[in-house]
Length: 356
Image 1: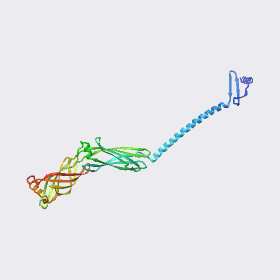
Image 2: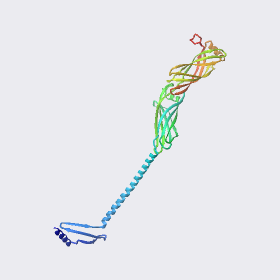
Image 3: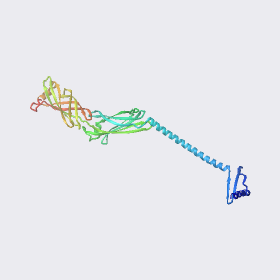
Image 4: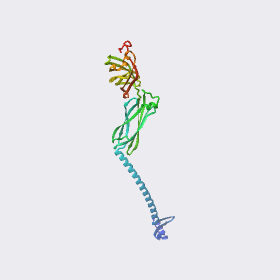
């Protein structure tokens, strides 16, 4: 069988040219080898040009793709690099948002006309550099009604890696409140809400607003009513008399008054009989009445006919003015006391149990 195959191959070789050179269109030599078998022909050829052209096209496409890929990859790498560097810097430096809290509200001064309020805000800066407080907006309202508002620009800086207490001063003018809201009466206690917006400028993060709130109560104080109930003489002579003034104080506020000191001056028939400052501790309950004894020394002969009218049982006019210093649930207050156009007299022994 092997012999037959060999002879057949040799026969095929004899019948056709087994190798013949030829030239291609571009002048290059082309060689082909053919083996002819019964019912089967194997052909192999080589040509430099088609393979070269195809390779050049493919190489060009690959270069364009590589170029685009390298370009896109470079930009992505730069972006990733910048992002990573930013994160590393942020992690290393530790920039973060500051925090704040309203730690207290104080009323250092309050009287019949206004209340000075201090709002304490504790601000904590976690950053390695100081941060500026750009603005502070504040609002005090009661039952949704604005009492006072304002803006504090350029409120300072918060030191690096530290905390600072920022004091926000606010003034409530009672006349403005009473003129705006008829239902807010003197002597009452009203609820309030303090709203504060801290605007800070943080590096890397930018400008942010920190909102804060605090609620409480604040009084609308009312001065006590005062009356000179009676005068009790310890010693009486026209040259010098020693007496005790029985004073009645009525507290018309919805909160207690803790009396500490009282300064006063008294006029009888437009003539001053003197005054003094008394240290007295007593509690005047809300909507209550308290009595205070005030010692005084004067010369009756200085009053002329007014004193004779008192001795004969006729009344004489008096005026009393002064101030009381009291403690309240909202802090210390200095409240005025005054009585003008009052009338007093010396009572007879049988008017009551006291000898007047």
